[in-house]
Amino acid sequence: MDELIIFDQYITDLIDDKPGLEDGIKKIKLYVTESFNDVNMQWLSDETVNTFYKEFEEWLNNLLVNEPLSQDIIALNFGLFELKDGIQLHISGSSKWDVKNTAWACNDDYFPEGRFARISVFKYIMKAYNHYNWAGIFLSLAIVIIFVSEYSLQNENKLICKGTEKLHLAAGFDDGDLYNI
Image 1 (tube, rainbow, N blue to C red):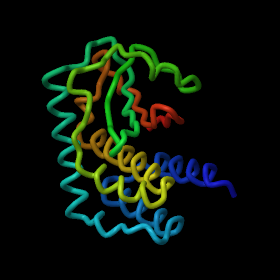
Image 2: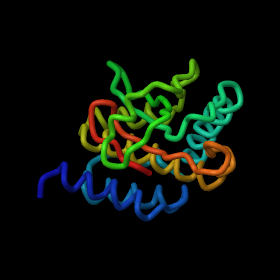
Image 3: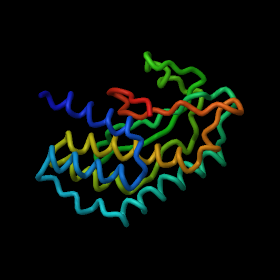
């Protein structure tokens, strides 16, 4: 089976299962071990995962307080892109959303100055990426999906649009597929 199809299936399963932080990390480790058995995953311990998640949570909390969403934002995109020496996470928002057409993610209706996250997990993921790029791509996207899912579970009241509706959340690489979470 083609690596891209397997990758897509694992990401889709991760989203469908909606695991919390602990179960999500277990699923990520299992997939990486099954698919990329020579990629070192010792850095992904319970302690480091909690540290990485706290960095993400602090970034997003500060962002939502200091640069709040306007009432017309109905979707958030947690985008990833590759830098020369790493992987970068950013956030943007849109006043439009369509489950079948991901072009909404290109709308920059919410484009805060603090959109770039500083999360140390990507330094470790870059090592996996340099060893085997599919492992790094998977880890980047899977970690973001797990973090966004956990944040959504723990902070549901912060991710509301137009007063009562939940925001549509998505994640993906800017030059690749977008996954609705």
